[in-house]
Length: 388
View 1 (cartoon, rainbow, N blue to C red):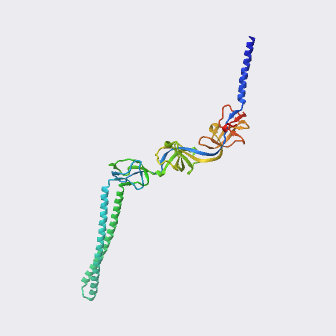
View 2 (cartoon, rainbow, N blue to C red; view 1 turned 135 degrees about the horizontal axis):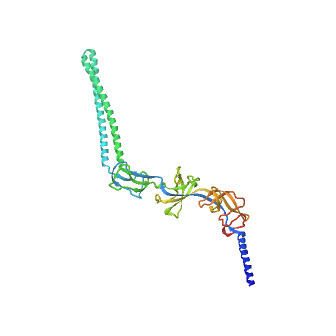
View 3 (tube, rainbow, N blue to C red; view 1 turned 60 degrees about the horizontal axis):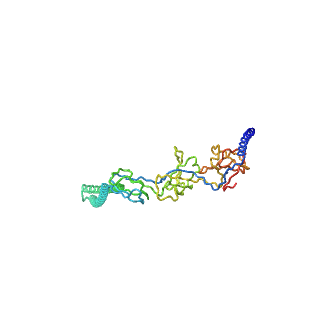
């Protein structure tokens, strides 16, 4: 009985000792940790989500009203500049053009008639002038009466007036001709509005009406896009857009081709940001995007705004008290743990932060802090490849 009680007493003493010894071993044994390595040629990138758009998109239709009698293009067609797309019934306008041309011909005839009248008036004036000259000479000699000389003078003056009238009529006829020519040009220009042509090499995105439709002036019939101006409109968070510039390299991923990346460059950055979402509109043009495109398709854009030749990067989970560009990290110095407040610079697309200041010489930064770390504790550094 005494031996049994003695054994129980010894056990009661050993259990706390074993537990305390285990805890002491756990707290003091060197813990294995991983530290940040120095990276080289690190791209600093920003992400943007957007859609496929085009810089040149035209909604075209007729300037005149009429019935649609010809259609020569449909959805998906590729058309070159100057191609006839559609035509309205233009018989009434063609009649106006013919009428205007007839008026021009009539005005030209009036000019010929006025010119002939001038020639006749000039001949009559010459004859009256000669007769008046003879009468005036004879009246001086007393061969004719004064009344006869006065009649000759009056006839001469009337012939001069008739010539002036004929010349004025010619000017009027010429003015009428110009007016009729202008009217004819106007009617011809209106006739041209009954035919719709492609303004540039384009792809037909939509056709809204069919043959026989009655169209009003300005009504949209086709939507055209210039395939050479297709680009991606991406929205980038203003907080990450400070280093964006036109010409920077980018990668585009289309939702329908998620396994492919297309190179491109920033073509334009809107001066006005989205006031609601606080995002900047950035346009990226591909160097060699797919020939087939779909307006409005979702696309992802990654833009390289900078590159670090050499940097020490830590994930955000390794930082405590992160505020702006400042935070606290765990470090290894001479095999023991320490903590330092550091300053961060760039941020990579995967969320790693560049440490630019605050580390003492030789200090290494822990990238995956574990629970139970304390300043001064010994550690073992696990490097890439499993080498301590």
